[in-house]
Image (cartoon, rainbow, N blue to C red; front, side, top):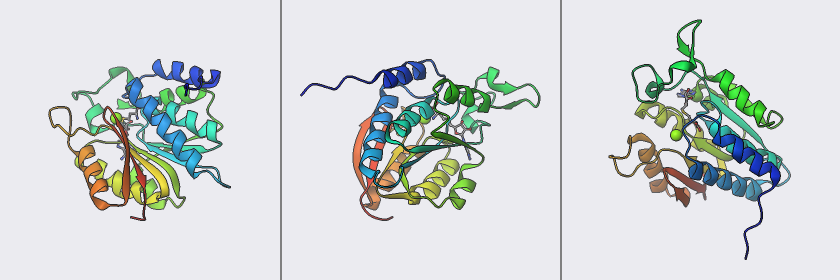
Length: 222
Ligand code: SAH
Ligand code: MG
């Protein structure tokens, strides 16, 4: 069986995403897109599939997931306070001085995120939710076809995202977690620990790994 050719639209978005700054290697981003497409197609029935990403930064993962939303008639809610995680602040490894707003000296990735989404012509199916992830999760009511967790990677924010958002994934929906490193030499523990917790719960089937991206499919309510 031959692989179907990518549509011109998909090629356009994949080319744009490669120029977008962020923390998502190409192969992991394409695996993310692929998982989101599968989940939206499997999940989509009468209702438009709803996707949520936690941790958008400048919109790199947003473009991959937005492509899946557009292609399946779904909508992506992209959650970020746009102030950066602990590891993005001055003096830390993933800091970028030109993302600091000179007006107040704080990181502000929102203008960059907006530019990415507008550049991808995805504003019709991507909605930004600017604020604290656990606060939004606590008020959220819509069952999710797909949830991508890539917010703060410290123990407290990572567990708060997992505890806040994983319960919203519908049976038959998917959960993807980024920066899962089984070997501590490769990166921090919390995303790996969330993934272990999900696997041990029995509520999820493993549905693929690419680099540090892990994908799970909900098989029973959690
Ligand atoms: N997915 C992005 C990278 C995300 S970096 C990419 O593809 O490049 C992690 C993001 O999580 C940062 O933008 C940070 O602002 C956000 N974040 C961290 N803690 C958060 C919280 N409590 N609420 C909302 N966003 C948060
Ligand atoms: Mg990440």
